[in-house]
Length: 70
Image 1 (cartoon, rainbow, N blue to C red):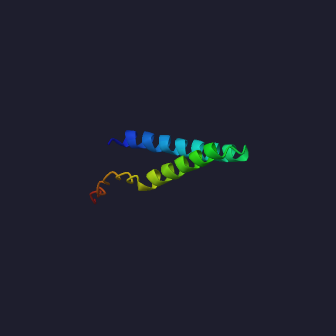
Image 2 (tube, rainbow, N blue to C red):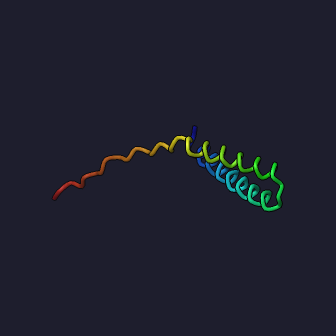
Image 3 (cartoon, rainbow, N blue to C red):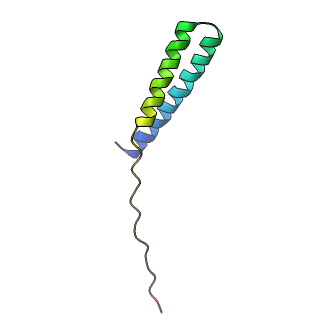
């Protein structure tokens, strides 16, 4: 996977997580139990996937360049 694709995927997953948690709260406050529980389960799935997502591989750091003396 490219770094840009991983960033976009993480952003999309974070957005889905926020929407699912907000929908769960709103549905439960409206006393729509089935919708609230479904959104809460979706939120749990998104959090689990986000935690299991592999960390981005850092780019190798080049060795420092020594300046010639004198």
